[in-house]
Image (cartoon, rainbow, N blue to C red; front, top):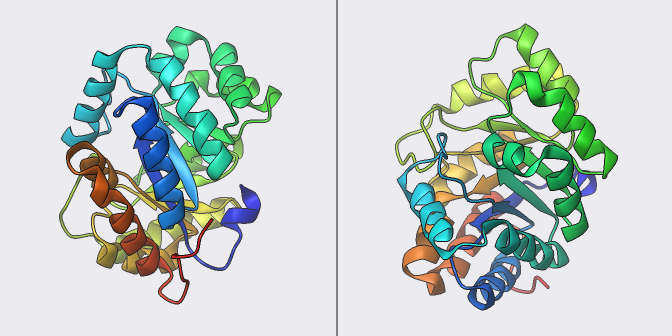
Length: 259
């Protein structure tokens, strides 16, 4: 993961909520997204209380929950995705608490995950979670709120591994309005002053044009809602959309021949 994010070009991450599609279709589309330009995968573990997500991803999680066997389906998705690209699980604390931090960390490590990001990790649980992940060689990226105090930023950065996640906008995922690029630039500079970890952005990067503006500020951009919307409504469009984002991040890098 470190080698991938240390490259001079901006890396593209694709977020896929596990269980949105049937296992066979899910594996097929993961294959296609990798070939279309995704450098890494974020696999979402469905939960009922996705408080930081907008309606598209929440609806995808609800669909996955109705299918049942959520954890098992997520593990199978991680197993397949990790054979294609480095893969990180995105989750909330509630599933971690319910399944047990040590147990869940081991399951995802055994499935091939490179890391797990708990987007709403409580401060008082951070040490336990980080120890559980470290014991099985999982990275623990941390989402950093835009207005975090410097003292809190130092503590979050010290406990993170893999990368720091800097949302490009402050509303929940699925935001489709303009981005305040100068504010994001100031924020990423704060993060780089606090930590040597790579910086990943997302949330509100709704078009390839916006991705091109964010790319010079960060080491990777993770695209969620646009890809999830395509997978939920017109899956055949997802590869072309992924290619459009990949080309926007690195216009001189061909993606047609990716293996």
